[in-house]
Image 1 (spheres, rainbow, N blue to C red):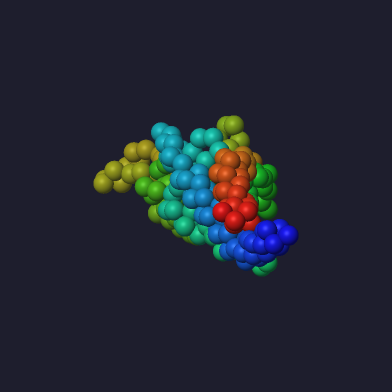
Image 2: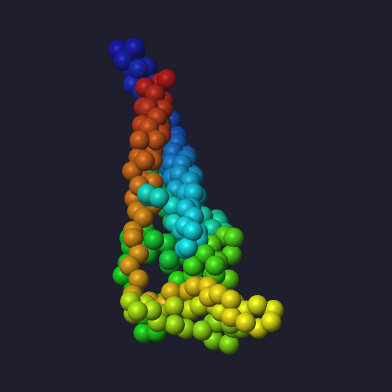
Length: 214
């Protein structure tokens, strides 16, 4: 009988120890999982952009976002663990509204016009040189409409003597834009699931070992 009593007491101690360690173990597992997802998400937002002879810098291929200034990627948030007891969770995401459009895609319409810069109107990072400014009043700029009905903002180039030399297409003006969904978040979660699952299983095994007296 004394052997059985001693065994029950040891089992009780082990179970209490496992209960005390379960919270910190699961919190650590959730924190590590969140950081894995955050790192993977940043990588998917660092896709190599393409270059087009006319349109300049364009987006990356596949389920990636091409980094321009890196601002969107740097504003990603995650890793903070919330909850208590045996229930913990974390969230990884972005405060930027345009990220949802990039993820899911969208069809946008304007009462005026959207202005799409060509390579000639972009900075080296692919940003519109006149971002936030109207082309009205800009030296040499004017609007033309092609035979196909497209509205363009062009810049006329002149020689030093004041003679017309050439015309550079700078902006395409459109009423509607269709943005393809990149599904960066969905793909990141799918790719990270095996690692996250492995971390959760390891945490569970450690808690079980403590409960078994290991």
